[in-house]
Length: 201
Image (cartoon, rainbow, N blue to C red; front, side, top):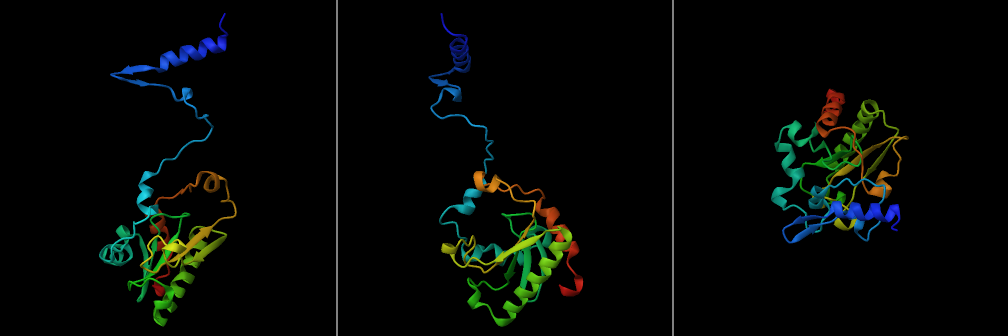
C-alpha cells in the first residue's frame, strides 16, 4: 500500500502537468533545486546600469544633459554657478544626492579651485538640508574616480551624499543585494528643494 505522502505527491505531480502541444509544464517542486522561504525582487532594468560597456557617449552624458532640463524632470534640487545638486536615479538610500560640476570632467584633480569650492559648499548645504528634512543620523560622502573604482558615470565627476539612519541596518542589502527605498524620487526632490535655503542657491 502506498503511503499517504507518496500518494499525495503523485497526485500533485499529475495535477501540475499540463499538455501544451509537445511541451509539458511541470511544477517547480519536481525540480532538483530546493525551494526556500525567500521572496525575489526581480529588477532586470538595472542591467543597463551594472553591465560592462554601459558608459554613455560624451554627447549623451546625463550630468551634462540634466542642467538643460527642468528641475523636476532632471531631479535637480539646487543650481550653483559652477556646480549643481540632483538626486541619484539609482539611490542607495532615500535622499541620495549627487553634486556635479557643469563642466564635463572625469576626476577631482581636473576641477578648478572655483569648482572645488562650490562642490564643497553645496555638499555642506545638502547635509544641513537632509539633516532637517529627513532626520538622518549620519552621512556617507565620497567620489568614485574611474570605472575601476566603481563610478557609474566615470567620465563626469560627481560627489555622493548618502543619508544614513541608525535604524536602517538590516539583512536586505547583504543577503538579497537589494535596497528598499521608501520614498519616490519626485517626492524626495520636492522635499529637499523646498528645504534648500534660497540665499545659498
